Image (cartoon, rainbow, N blue to C red; front, side, top):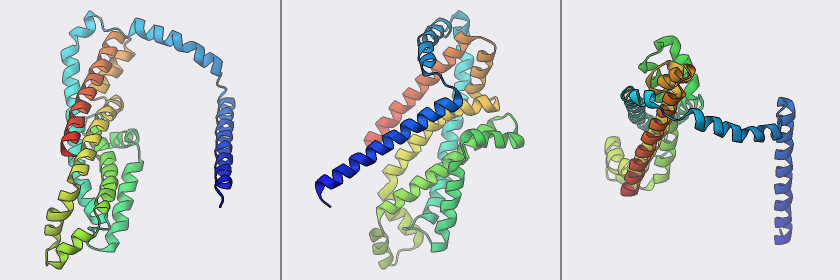
Amino acid sequence: MQPDTFFRRRRIQSALFFIAMVAITYGGMVLTQFDLVQGLSVIPRAFAWGIANFVPDERAWARLPRILEKLQETVLIAVASSTIASIFGLVLALLGANTTRPHPWFSLPARAIASIFRNIDVSVWALILLFSFGQSGFTGFFALFFVTFGFITRVMVETIDEVGIEPVEALRATGAGYTAIISQSVIPACLPQLISWVLYMIETNIRSATLVGILTGTGVGFLFDLYFKNFSYGSASLVVLATVAVVLLIETVSNYIRRTIL
């Protein structure tokens, strides 16, 4: 294929894709009766209302110890669910990865389990688990656990497969057992990437735990929902500010750890 023909075809494909996206967007606006001009015009008023109402007042600052207590609970649930799910996910990933699977029959079930848990949203898990555990910390923990388990299993399978089969075959040739191959070859080779993914899931779950708390009536999400519904906007804004500060702090620490190990 000539270069001119190739680039002309790519330009045509890009133009068709752009036209299709515009048509889909316009169709969605027509079906939902969305007025773009009106939507853009309310943005300045929304900012003005937010600045006027979401400034922490003296009453909000008096509630800060309670907010920090619930925020600590939320962070601990997110960290615990992430780390424990990563341990179980690593075991399932070792069974499902092409490099380390004990038998080819293990691969498909392991990947299917990971896909099922990963593709169900954390809010759906929280609503499902409400029937079993009610409004308690266990509901939030298991909702985050299941989503993390599915996601971390999938990325760990791909990370382990990237290691390659050559080091594994070399150890097998020396007579090493399955446990020795895993501990001496596979885990050391992909440990930095695995730690990086675990840190990423901790960051993600701290954000998700706030939403789960609103649904389950626990943690800092419960406080935000309570204050917001009682029109205590200053207290609700303080919850948001405290959560953002903690998320940024943890993200800074995790980025430092990534730079250290990678």
